Structures are given as structure tokens and as C-alpha cells.
Image (cartoon, rainbow, N blue to C red; front, side, top):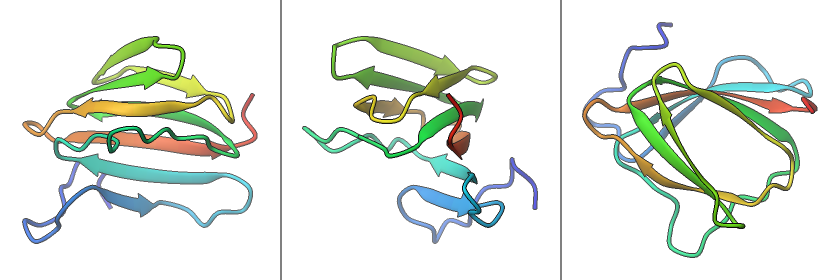
Length: 105
């Protein structure tokens, strides 16, 4: 598998692929094509999440109003239960994320 290969045109919406089995830590690749969190929706995850943007751009917002813009090569660590949402992902080029979920903090 290549981290930069894109799913076929038939793939609609965001594509999430687990790269290794979840044994307390989950590693996944996410391909977003302009997706954002639905209005009013906030992630409140049980586990910490380290996320890196490999291609494209994205913008995250926290419940306290703080925002961060991510470009290719940028990464961020999101502690468990830090309420956040995806405000924007690029569609051209698609935003390719690498995410690691687990006890990281």
C-alpha cells in the first residue's frame, strides 16, 4: 500500500483505512475531499490522537474557539476528550491524513 495513492473515483465521501490491527493503538490513513464536520458536531474521543497532514490542507477548531491551520508536513496531538471539529479539508489536492489513536499523552 502507498500512503499517497488515492481511492478510485467510485469512493464517495471520506475514506478511512486502518493500517494495522487495533491492539490499543490504531493507525489509520484518511483521505478527505473537502469534507468537514457536520454543523454543531464535536469530536470527543476516548483516546488521544496524533494526526499529520501528508498532502493538502485542513483546519481544526476547538470548542474554546481556537483554530489551527494544517498544511502538508504539519502535525498536532489532540488529547482525549479535547472537543474539536474539522472545519475544512482541501479537495484539490485531496487532504491525506495519517492518524494514530491511543494512550499518547
